[in-house]
Image 1 (cartoon, rainbow, N blue to C red):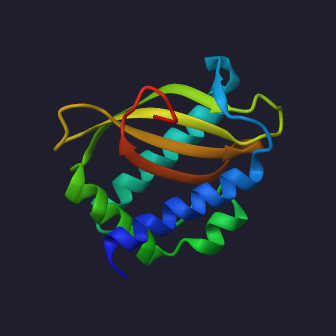
Image 2: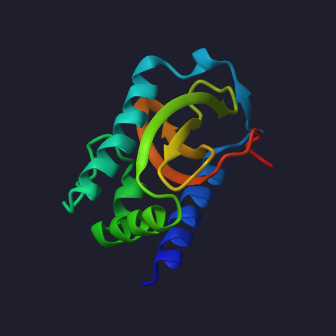
Length: 151
């Protein structure tokens, strides 16, 4: 499987699952809509992913990954996605929580947006982590930063 195909598959999985989980329009929420546990969980997931892959180690999905994501993501897919990121963006230098989007419903999925600095980029990239209730990670993706989620 080519790296671009792996990226497309990850994006499709994230979008399909996210769209099926959201009944209402997604909008920017106040920062406090994402509690410290959610932000820390998402940030740790991304940092551990990069650190593990950087060290040529097989990344084991943590316990707080959704069943759907666990069933659809393989170690090979994660490795291919990492190589695509490294090729296009370079290694991740830093990650900073920026904002949260969602429907505002208590049990709805949230999108935590982080600005990530990468060695090949002059500007930040978006690291987007999708969370279900109880800080369960339902997907993540990296793309060029845009101020509005739907630009």
